[in-house]
Length: 126
Image (cartoon, rainbow, N blue to C red):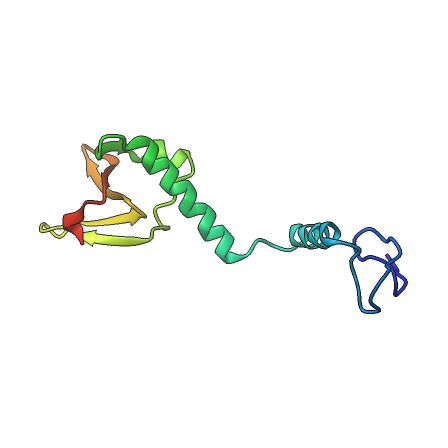
């Protein structure tokens, strides 16, 4: 799209005003940058943030009472990825719980079935 010097980058309308003006209004400016962002590959930050949000949503859904056990396959099938977490906590038995914000999980194998023990962050864990 070849533009004249006095046309809006987004809609192509003639620009009135300053000589260095490139958009006719804020809507066109926002629209242009939104379309440009769709063409770019998702940023690493966005990928991580989206996965953390999904992990938290899944853990919250399965951990209504503060402690729960769920089969690994169930939450993994929903898109849970245990490689994405925000922090960890180690208990007195040296079990390391990984947390996604306030929801924690620990992978265990019981009777040849992989499970996750889900807990919620408590004040004594600080």
